[in-house]
Length: 129
Image (cartoon, rainbow, N blue to C red):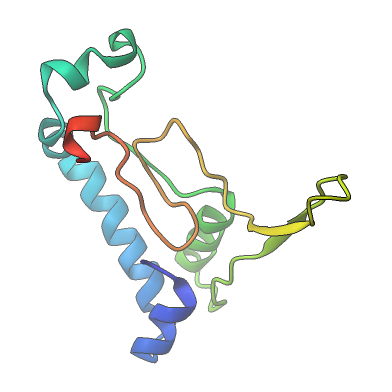
Protein backbone atom coordinates (compact mmCIF):
# COMPACT_ATOMS: atom_id res chain seq x y z
CA UNK A 1 0.00 0.00 0.00
CA UNK A 2 1.09 3.54 -0.65
CA UNK A 3 -0.80 5.53 1.95
CA UNK A 4 0.57 9.06 2.26
CA UNK A 5 -0.04 9.31 6.00
CA UNK A 6 1.51 5.90 6.72
CA UNK A 7 4.58 6.68 4.58
CA UNK A 8 5.06 10.01 6.37
CA UNK A 9 4.60 8.43 9.80
CA UNK A 10 6.98 5.54 9.04
CA UNK A 11 9.72 7.76 7.63
CA UNK A 12 9.19 10.90 9.68
CA UNK A 13 9.57 12.86 6.45
CA UNK A 14 6.60 14.27 4.51
CA UNK A 15 8.77 14.58 1.38
CA UNK A 16 9.01 10.81 0.92
CA UNK A 17 5.47 10.28 -0.43
CA UNK A 18 5.72 12.80 -3.30
CA UNK A 19 9.21 11.56 -4.18
CA UNK A 20 8.00 7.93 -4.34
CA UNK A 21 4.96 8.89 -6.42
CA UNK A 22 7.13 10.90 -8.80
CA UNK A 23 9.61 8.04 -9.13
CA UNK A 24 6.81 5.59 -9.92
CA UNK A 25 5.30 7.85 -12.58
CA UNK A 26 8.75 8.37 -14.12
CA UNK A 27 9.36 4.59 -14.09
CA UNK A 28 6.04 3.88 -15.82
CA UNK A 29 6.85 6.56 -18.39
CA UNK A 30 10.33 5.16 -19.03
CA UNK A 31 9.56 1.43 -18.78
CA UNK A 32 5.94 1.21 -19.89
CA UNK A 33 7.01 -0.91 -22.85
CA UNK A 34 8.44 -3.54 -20.49
CA UNK A 35 5.28 -3.49 -18.41
CA UNK A 36 3.25 -3.98 -21.60
CA UNK A 37 5.47 -6.91 -22.64
CA UNK A 38 4.92 -8.53 -19.25
CA UNK A 39 1.21 -8.93 -19.97
CA UNK A 40 1.39 -9.66 -23.71
CA UNK A 41 -0.14 -12.95 -24.76
CA UNK A 42 -2.55 -13.91 -27.54
CA UNK A 43 -5.39 -14.44 -25.07
CA UNK A 44 -4.82 -11.13 -23.31
CA UNK A 45 -4.15 -9.10 -26.44
CA UNK A 46 -7.41 -10.16 -28.08
CA UNK A 47 -9.73 -9.95 -25.09
CA UNK A 48 -12.56 -7.48 -25.55
CA UNK A 49 -11.99 -7.62 -29.30
CA UNK A 50 -8.43 -6.25 -29.04
CA UNK A 51 -9.92 -2.77 -28.72
CA UNK A 52 -9.78 -2.03 -25.01
CA UNK A 53 -7.75 -4.32 -22.83
CA UNK A 54 -4.87 -4.36 -22.40
CA UNK A 55 -4.00 -0.97 -23.80
CA UNK A 56 -1.16 -0.69 -26.28
CA UNK A 57 0.41 2.08 -24.18
CA UNK A 58 0.87 1.72 -20.44
CA UNK A 59 0.14 4.93 -18.56
CA UNK A 60 -0.71 5.89 -15.02
CA UNK A 61 -3.60 7.89 -13.64
CA UNK A 62 -3.24 9.58 -10.27
CA UNK A 63 -6.56 11.39 -9.99
CA UNK A 64 -7.15 15.09 -9.59
CA UNK A 65 -6.29 15.41 -5.88
CA UNK A 66 -2.90 13.65 -6.11
CA UNK A 67 -2.01 15.41 -9.36
CA UNK A 68 -2.80 18.82 -7.85
CA UNK A 69 -0.80 17.93 -4.72
CA UNK A 70 2.25 16.86 -6.75
CA UNK A 71 2.03 19.95 -8.93
CA UNK A 72 1.91 22.18 -5.84
CA UNK A 73 4.84 20.23 -4.33
CA UNK A 74 6.81 20.78 -7.53
CA UNK A 75 6.17 24.50 -7.18
CA UNK A 76 7.50 24.55 -3.61
CA UNK A 77 4.44 23.91 -1.47
CA UNK A 78 5.17 22.18 1.82
CA UNK A 79 1.62 20.90 2.30
CA UNK A 80 1.05 17.29 3.24
CA UNK A 81 -1.20 15.16 1.03
CA UNK A 82 -4.27 14.14 2.95
CA UNK A 83 -6.91 12.34 0.92
CA UNK A 84 -10.37 13.63 1.58
CA UNK A 85 -13.39 11.40 1.86
CA UNK A 86 -16.93 11.96 0.71
CA UNK A 87 -20.18 10.45 1.92
CA UNK A 88 -22.37 8.59 -0.52
CA UNK A 89 -26.00 9.05 0.36
CA UNK A 90 -27.87 6.03 -0.88
CA UNK A 91 -31.34 7.48 -0.47
CA UNK A 92 -32.46 4.08 0.71
CA UNK A 93 -33.53 3.49 4.32
CA UNK A 94 -32.32 -0.11 4.28
CA UNK A 95 -28.80 0.81 3.08
CA UNK A 96 -26.80 3.15 5.27
CA UNK A 97 -24.81 6.05 3.86
CA UNK A 98 -21.11 5.22 3.51
CA UNK A 99 -17.80 7.01 3.09
CA UNK A 100 -15.52 6.55 0.08
CA UNK A 101 -12.18 8.09 -0.92
CA UNK A 102 -12.38 11.04 -3.29
CA UNK A 103 -9.72 9.62 -5.61
CA UNK A 104 -11.16 8.89 -9.01
CA UNK A 105 -10.79 5.19 -9.70
CA UNK A 106 -10.32 5.54 -13.43
CA UNK A 107 -11.37 2.12 -14.70
CA UNK A 108 -9.69 2.58 -18.07
CA UNK A 109 -6.18 3.31 -16.84
CA UNK A 110 -3.83 0.31 -16.81
CA UNK A 111 -1.93 1.69 -13.78
CA UNK A 112 -4.10 4.04 -11.67
CA UNK A 113 -3.68 5.32 -8.12
CA UNK A 114 -6.88 4.28 -6.40
CA UNK A 115 -6.53 5.70 -2.93
CA UNK A 116 -3.65 4.21 -0.93
CA UNK A 117 -2.47 1.92 -3.71
CA UNK A 118 -1.40 1.72 -7.32
CA UNK A 119 -3.04 -1.07 -9.33
CA UNK A 120 -1.59 -2.79 -12.39
CA UNK A 121 -4.76 -3.70 -14.27
CA UNK A 122 -3.36 -4.77 -17.61
CA UNK A 123 -2.94 -8.43 -16.69
CA UNK A 124 -5.43 -10.94 -18.05
CA UNK A 125 -7.38 -13.54 -16.10
CA UNK A 126 -4.75 -16.25 -16.61
CA UNK A 127 -2.12 -13.92 -15.16
CA UNK A 128 -4.19 -13.16 -12.08
CA UNK A 129 -4.62 -16.78 -11.07
